[in-house]
Length: 212
Image (cartoon, rainbow, N blue to C red; front, side, top):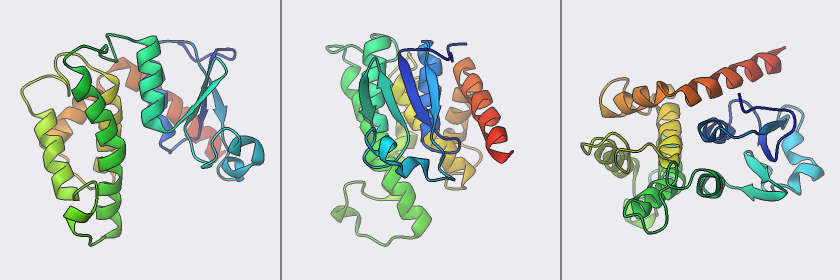
């Protein structure tokens, strides 16, 4: 397992947060990394030392060989380009690269605010906001995962699938999406990946520690 006490990559993490997406990506990369726990219950995310790492006081944050990266999309682009070029990240010049980047930014810039729209029952004209509407997001997502190809950008699983599938899984857990249909099928396919199973095991262990 690549989770080790000493490694060049450090993930600042708390269970049951968006940091899980980066935990899954790190398991997909198969490189050594270590976890630095951020204790939300005791306000660890707002401590001065952590705010120097991420001024927003959020997780995840990653320090890679002394270089700090925050925001999930930026973390994914950096790690996948550096450690899995041509695999989890299509190369610059690859025809799949634009679609890959599109889905990464779609996950952060469209899916997340659209989820909030649904959760909080916002009534906003779709033409006035960048994400359009929850319905637009859902339709576009279904078209992307049901386009007759195994993964979002083609026959190769990429970091974009990690980001999008993590969001969709959360959406299913919170009843934003039905438990059957194309979204459920796509999430179920991702759930078979060994790296995700390892990440879930780490998450479960950390939830158990948190509860004790």
